[in-house]
Image (cartoon, rainbow, N blue to C red; front, side, top):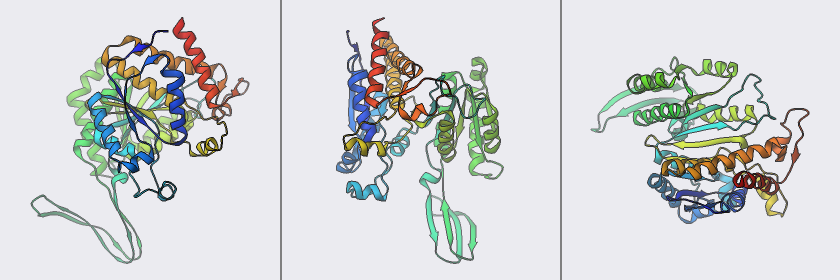
Length: 406
């Protein structure tokens, strides 16, 4: 079979632990036999980040800006235990956080649905896409453990050195904790544009929710910027596309989401999106069945799996044991990146291959061949067989070859 030719590389970001093992399996069995794969490779595994003092992460983000499309393996964000385990010189920051900040991007996460696994919320029939503003909030907050009684103040000094705002946060009568978070109008505007454009591209309604009744400056700023951008730039486009923009409070949004059938984009601030994406993925079945794409306002894309590095399976793998680790989200990261590369370069064959790879993966699941994490989720009476990761990927390859030869 003649390999599909690529004209422009995509950025490949390798990762850690079990997902790194799956990454190579996927390339060897599902990509390289069919595509003349052109990538600019960056190793974001923790040892290489330590070796380069995390310069490799910055380089990979700059490469994504250059080429426009990237695919990323799951990576470790080290805590104290990981620092000791890997002998790190410092607790390196999350690669995802660094890349998101450099691309000024929004993360869109959506579940992959199959007929044999029904959502825990019985009326959900269509995917719910979570759009997470991946900047600021508590992830960039300044924190302080208050040791004893005293006054905490919020102070702003302008660039000329003049104090223009001072207000007491709390007069502590005992020990406590203090946190100051921030965001920027420019980042909120980028978030809004990414959400509106993604809704138009996917022809889905867009919901946005904050708690502006309580947070009358911070959350209300998000609400007002979204309203302004929608009215000025997207209202007519949404009407022409037959889709709607809807704002409501975060608690009302949660109630509406549970009662809905799905099939829309739910835009959330950083922390809300972090929590709700895990809730949605679990309710639909599994975090291993969740796609994730980072989209910048100027049209750069970085595809990845929504889950982590599957440490527990990796330790078993190192002992020589076979594991049944679900590779679907990582496969769909590759297919998403290849499809976008094909769309941007006008390569219809590459787009068709990405579609065929996803269809072969879904057919394998529909045929009852799946990893152990999914077998326990299938509806009663559905025949399902648990296989190892390698067996599962080979089953996908068999169906992919048949589809491509046909």
